Every structure is written in C-alpha cells, then in structure tokens.
Length: 348
Image (cartoon, rainbow, N blue to C red; front, side, top):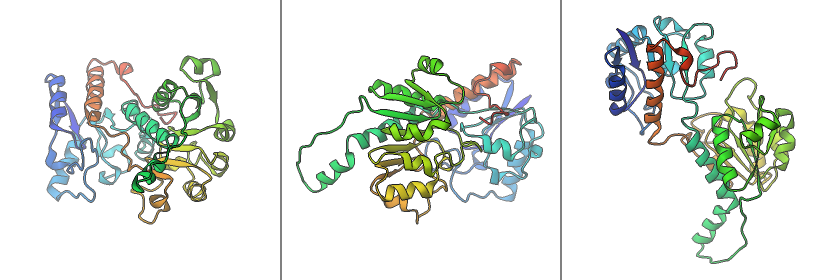
C-alpha cells in the first residue's frame, strides 16, 4: 500500500477528509506528537524552537523515508540532508505555499522525477483583499481620520476615490489577476507586468495595459498604487531597486504581498522616512520576523502585517481539496491532470 505522510501541522478534520478520499489505497500517516504545535489556525510551521526527542525524531525521519506522498515539505532545518536521500520513495509533494522555488533548489529536486504541486491560487483572494484594504487605507486617509478621532476633532474635508486611479501590478499570476479584478471593480485603471502577455491577451485577461520590466520605472512614476505579487526568483531579486523607488510619487502607495527580497529594503526605508512615498503596506520583509531595530516598525506611513495576509480560516480546507484531487490523479496514473504543477525549468 502507498503511504502518505502529513509532515507539517494540519487539523484533524482535514486529515480525516484525506483518509476518506484515499479509500483504503493509501495509508495516511498523521502523528501530531511528531509535529510542532500550531501557533494559529492554518499554521504550517508550528512554534519556534521546537525540538523533537531522539525517539520522536527517529520516527519522523522513518515516516519521511517510507512515504511516496507528502502533504507539505518540512522546513529545511528539520531535514537531515540537503538532497532527497532522506526520502528515497518520494513520488510527490503537495506544498502549502506557492513560492517553493528556493526549496526545490535547496533539495536539488530538478530532474529527480518527483512531482511538486503548489498552493498557487489558494491565497489569491485573501491577498487581493489585503491589497485593496491597503490602497483604500491610503486613498481614504485612514491615518488622518484616526489622528482626528484621537484628538476629538470634527473637521470635514474633501476626500479621494479609487475610480480613475492607476494601479500597477507587478506580477500577473493568480494573485495579481485577483488584485486586478478587485481594482477594476472599483474603477481603477490596471496595468500588469508580465513576461508572456501581449497587449491583446492582456486585455482579454482584464488588464488595461501590459508592461515589461524595462517599463517598470515609467509605470511606477505614473501609478497611484503599486502592488508587488511576483515570486522570489533570481530574476526578481531586488527588482524594486533604487531607480524604481525613486520614481514612485509622494502621494502613491506600495503594497508588498510578494516576498521581502524583491525590494531594496534600505532604499524603501529611506524613501518612506522622507515622505518620498506616501504609504507602504508590507506583509513581508527581507528578514522575517522583522527585526526589532527596523525603522519600519515606527514609521507612521507604514502598515506592517506579519506575513499573515494570506492566512485565513478556510486555507487548509482548500489545500486539502487540492491534495485530494492531485492524489486521485496519481492513483489513476494521470499526473498531467494534477493541478498547480511546479515548473522545474521556469522556477515557479
């Protein structure tokens, strides 16, 4: 019988769903005692500093070695090697994240024959909601309202509307597309950066404009909002560099729901400190957790979200749906029908 090992924390309700879907063809191994306690619902890493006893570590590694299917890959620091020798029977990994390029690279999975499927699209809705919230916070001057409220000051003023404003979405994948949908619904002009879309195919996807990386400085200078939604790859590392940051207008907002490494963080901090950028909503940082000494914590024009914008109560149910679908594809010997297959060559 095939074995599937749930290697990171998961609610028992979802484990039961996987077991029922396996219909006796796959032994689903889930031992909560081997996994770090969850810090919150949907937590796939567990508490910091978790250390297994030698006996529990041996059981954990034995399950990894025997499994053909993995629900998630454990954090790299919990693995005994930096290759796949610890899991010789592995055929497939369903990850709980969409940005898994660094894991694939670190474990040398290219050319291994192991199927990797990601959680791409699972987080698109909550991330788009976070981006819209951040843009609205800036456009509707929420910070000013809070200051006036704390001062018991009733001062009427003329506000702004989203309609007619321009948003640049850096990354036209699942998340970027959902951001575009909510922005267009509110009457915004949507420009999207893409390597593959043409102006014609972009319009069919709902974008008013498609641009490439070479146009990034120009588009940033013309935009009221910039939303970062690209995966972190060697090509996107520090993509939002000093030249792009310098082009962003003082009345604009930048939202990072990608990875901290796609931004030159020191340059961003400098721009925010002098008001060269109006507002930044950051769900990610170059170093996480964000160090206590980071100036970002105390800047009045910054909103810090602790890499939590994508985490909602429904997340694990949706990932479990994906796992069940992909498991059934493999059981039917139809790997081409698996959803969210990671492209080993492209790195996403």
